[in-house]
Length: 465
Image (tube, rainbow, N blue to C red; front, side, top):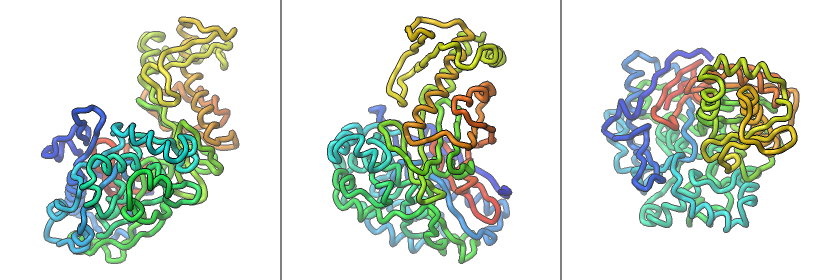
């Protein structure tokens, strides 16, 4: 786990010619969000050149892998595979791949323009719960199958000219292979297309999205598969060893689960603007809320992902209103009240929550009567206990069971008090420092879901995009 090299390329700052904000373009409808494919390609050029200039010894790299933002999709045009296989080491990638994409701007995870396609998919398979049981999630706008369906419906000529569809992860792996890399089980779970139990594409979902889709996706593979050796382009241009292996790239969320070294029964709680819960499950129960993905570490196990939109901003608002804008006062108030809050309970959704879909602040006293307000110290404990009990309840809804496990809390600034309330899960807990590239600890190569590409090299393996 020793880090030998680490660097990044910031899309907005370092590649201003693409005109992105936060690494993306938000279209006029406010729903469509895309990123330029060639920006990602050029970012790889930039970071490899920086490594070369620093004297990094690529010949010592025995294997490489990576992580990419989930759900995004890349559309390779007819004939692109021939270009990939015959790259000239005299030129950077972005100059050689300019004509290789039938769609120059890739839909990314922030896109929410496919509501129509989501409803169509759910109807086609027999309902949202049926789809969740098949693929691990009900239909979501950002999921790749619905993005593909939109492209097929609105731009059929683009779809017909596409010979291969990659996820961001398998796209990045393809750049290193010099050929199309397969999609791995874990990242493929975020498409509304993969049957998570059988690990095969769902024929019903494929048919509902677009014709000939299975051929354009290729067969999926386990996340730990060696998918080939590095392209001769990198051997000649950068000095990689000819036997350097490429392991299937995966999504940022699955790689984060592996990078935090979770084990069966573990939970990871990331406290941020949105709170995120990662779970390692053996027997999942797909539901209408949350997501079940194939586990990137153990092929026969699963991982669950729950996202709560009202996270740190909601806590900061109650801090400002009830603790004089002070985290110290907030923590004192939390410690001054008893566990269980004397029966007072609150649900705090300042913005529309997604788990579940609800908005508003709702407070209930010990007699189960809704009340308009609580005293400041009661309000603070009601908020924290309510947030963590909600996490436990929704986790149990996906199949989590309390056991002798750990809770890995990824800390965020000024949330020391939340350690007190992990008792909501009735399990021991500890903090593990997590940086932006925690998924890089497992995969190394990361295409960030936000605004940069990062490179991370450790223990004889290359970690990059």
